[in-house]
Image 1 (cartoon, protein in one colour):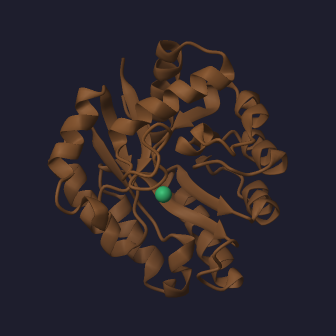
Image 2: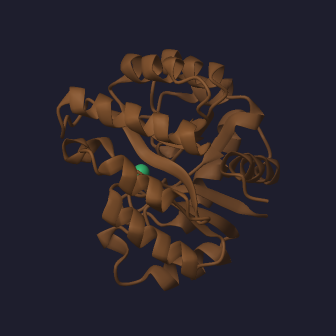
Length: 253
Ligand SMILES: [Zn+2]
């Protein structure tokens, strides 16, 4: 069984001391492909270095909505320079976070729109983070015709899901689907087979039964098991489906 962790943060400080053993444990669990997602330009450069050195590891280049107040004239040219490298398979993560509001909302929207345009220009998928911003994210997504992407760590409502599916996007679920308070099972079931991805978002959001510990890519197996349960699907089938979908989105053979 091959597993594809479509969203992790291997450059996070929490992994500073042990990326190698973490990758080894991931492989032991069957995680053959991973995309490490960047939050800013320095992070993207670091992620690229790691991806170059690691089989089966790819990366993104983008500016997270939490960092959107750092968006300026140099951001897009800097991302473009990184994004032309073959290991960079996506733009992001980008999007809107009106829960934490770490940056002014107008800045977040400007930063997100610029990255949507960059993704279109480079014909790369965009990895989108949306929290408490369903309507605004859905609006920008509907305007951004010709952009492929994924709604990562999906916790939104039916309106955002619909906008994503209408646009032909993928929807990715994290360990949150295993939490007791998770109430989005009907939305999980609404995602067609060919649009579904899985992710850890590690080091955050460790799934049950490892909840509360540092999350790592090997834990994607628990998320897969829970998703299979919710969708009444076989684990092996769902592993193959999500692996195929991630390869299609990121254009890996
Ligand atoms: Zn993330």
